[in-house]
Image (cartoon, rainbow, N blue to C red):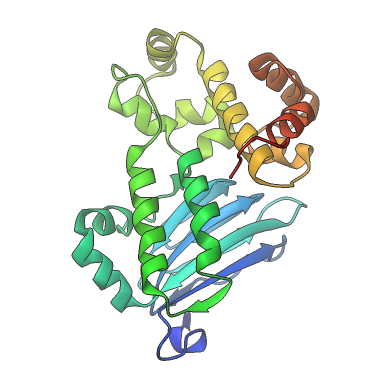
Length: 274
């Protein structure tokens, strides 16, 4: 197994390195580990995250934390290029963060390589603070810690679910693969029978599982339209819609306008966007 070394990327006085990568489909890469910590998020497209425990599809807006001992690899899926951003940190910097926010470091750099769906708040944080760090190596501790502590705070807020919704359901709805697999994926993940899941979703959200997940997809697509220049059809595919026409109909039904009109209106002079 290949082992990546921080000395390859960092000078002795540097503590972190941020880079953007464009991945294309190809052979499945070999697993690697490293002597540093990582945070990476998918800016656009989809990737397969391959680990010793298995594989998972990560869609746009998904963030994952990995430790030095976590062997893994990333592979783009589909014909379109995938963009990811990677932030590597020396282990000593994570030790410093652990002294400041021990519970957050323990929660996010856990042994599960658990992907986290990025909320709009988290995207704002990344858009505002990432330019202070990169691209490339940095010795600036304040913006590095500021970005990560802000990300921890934004992730801790979590999605806004009804307070009465059971935890097993909100945990299932928080899984990134739901955006790709839809209601079928929800039924596979939720630890209840399909009829029971349908009843509970209707009871707490007032709609069917398919309608709820499509609403979540449209919300995520709306964020992407504001925060990227990606073609609209690519945005639709990344949030789980295989048919652009169906995406356009649902987007108009939910927002009252087309994706293009929404993007132009929200980016017009006088409006603040991240």
